[in-house]
Image (cartoon, rainbow, N blue to C red; front, side, top):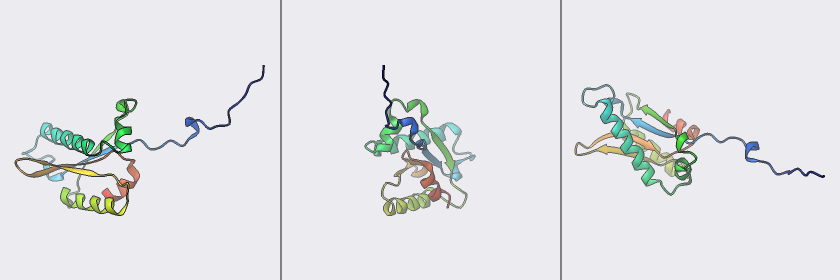
Length: 137
């Protein structure tokens, strides 16, 4: 009996893509203070992450991040702004990058109301390396 082999490459032969990651960036002034406990900060991060998912629900990256086979592998990284950076300035830098580079991940700044306090910036699911350069300039 003759056997045949396929010359097509399999998915296992393809280079592995970096996993999708959502970055949540907390304003440094809120961490460790007396006004915001851990629970309220966690709620702010949850609000920001759901807001960016809602805003980007039609993007391929968000759909892949939310795919049933990826749910158990979702990755989030929680960071805080450096002491000399606030969420507004980080948001402006990210907006500039979004306009200059099509496909750069969008973001959402969660503002706690009625206080009007920016608390957490969330980036849509992305492959980290291009974003790291903007976050850590």
